[in-house]
Structures are given as C-alpha cells and as structure tokens.
Length: 130
Image 1: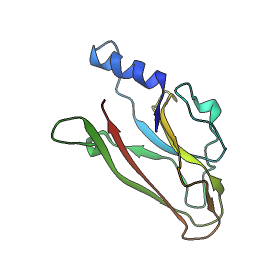
Image 2: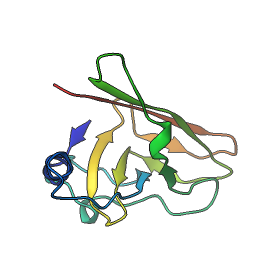
Image 3: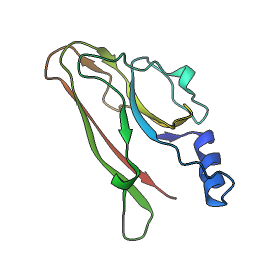
Image 4: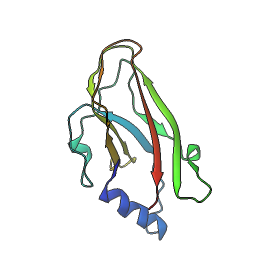
C-alpha cells in the first residue's frame, strides 16, 4: 500500500488542528494498470464503472479499530459481489470527500478478471504507524 504525500500532509494538519474538516473516506476499485506512488492522484486511476455489483463504499469512521498500542488501525473486510462482467481490476484506492487519493494499492496477485455473476473481490485495510 502506498500512502500519498497529500495524505501525509493532511494527517499532520489534523494532528496540529490546522485542518479540522472531517471528510468521509471512500473505498474504490480501479481498472487501469497504473503505477501507484506517493504522487498518485485520482486522474491516474480509472475507477471501475458503477453497476454489475460495483459501487464505491463509504468507510465509516466508527468502524475503524486500533490495536492496544495504537500503532495499527484496521477496517472490517469489504467485499464486492459482482453480478456481471467488469473486466480486469488492478487494485483499490481510498479518497476523501474532496477527491484526494489518500492511499492506493495494486493487488499483489492481480489483476482480477471479473467475468461472472458471483465473482468476489474483498479488500482488507490495515494502516500501521512506523
């Protein structure tokens, strides 16, 4: 997973109360063979088109859980069950409500070629502070 420079700046801004607007996070899948880096933006990623079981998923703030030391945050698994073909899906990304890509990941064993009713993609997110 690559956390973008924009996300790092936002995180530090929240830490010192420079940024106080809480923004909804949205989990999305992308269908282009993009190279993900700390400068990846929404223009670099082609979101999977809505329909056939796909729509972006809003991530609820209260659903994140922290480990005992506070160094890991995890979100419950999110699964898309497709009802028809979507083609190759290369990875996922998370945006805030301003459209900023906060992090993205290319599926290590992807792309996944979604062709059939019942095909699944599950994303597990864990953020670790280092």
